[in-house]
Image (cartoon, rainbow, N blue to C red; front, top):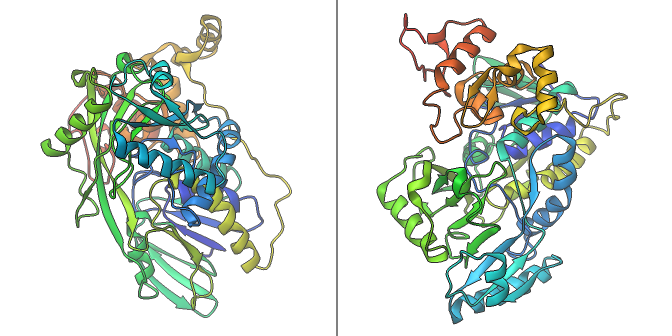
Length: 478
């Protein structure tokens, strides 16, 4: 098996790069150890398209945050991905907080961020009526936005595959060897020869690097816990609301999501386990107590799920984005933590330019797609539009998930697209059955039936997410 570029890691950066490179007349292979794209840090984050004031000036984080933010709205429009410009606030409750706001404002100006300014107490309360009444001021960034992180990563991969890129999942990289003209990458039960490798492996980026050269950085996993509240709480907070940042991160955030829920978190705890996604009572208590300082009336009884994510914090203190010295053809994007979601399109642009030059400037393909087939979201249609769809295909009238009004036809479509759903959680990320208040309590059996039918496998072979995560026993029924 041969490829011109092998991208290791199908998170938001790897998917962005695959799409960009798929425009050229080269063979692109995107591989990931997991059963789907976007199952690492891309899956578990606050979904903010950062304005760009927080990153330390003159760093790669600051540069790619600014450049990536400028690309986001158009990118989401092209790929039919949710995007809402709602603005962000960093709130201050005392003198020390206000000193931090001034530092952030000054940093934002140095970073080239426009429309960034301090607002007084009355202005804060006008924007956020439910915020703690003891608020004194805030830093307001009106151009901050929210998106759907895994929806975007899926859309990027789908569009890349539309243009000929290949995707290999359940394919952990076990060995990389130097070859006469590049590398031999062993993954899963296969191997590929390639002149270019791009390390986008998230929390494992230092591990991948070490397969070719002793890394000059390490990944320090930092876990953060989140609450997701029911849509009935979705309008309690209007903007992305931060408290002043600490040494461990930007602090606990309260914000609406593009789907109408309210997300709260994360805390920040450093541990040695890159795959520890446990949610503990202590972490939940921390997030809850800190969030209530910003919004005292938050109703955590409306929480429909709690989850954790792991950030790939680099010991270098910055993104690691480069053509690795001494290893021609080995590129990497390591240590991609916040604002990595925002920075991803710009990182892809930067790396693709270097890779294309390294490959001898192959030409652009004559016929490429920069958009993907639109996603029909049944719940957002008018009654007339719904009627027309049901008349053409009765599956549009079969409501599988009552919480989110997801139809059988939407699930079927998500399965049969490029980068389609193959697991219960894969369906959930793409079209949202199981994302509502009951968290799949009613729709799970039907989702399993549809997956089994469309994938032509027994129901007991349908997996929740990772290989072996079966939901039914052999011989069981739904």
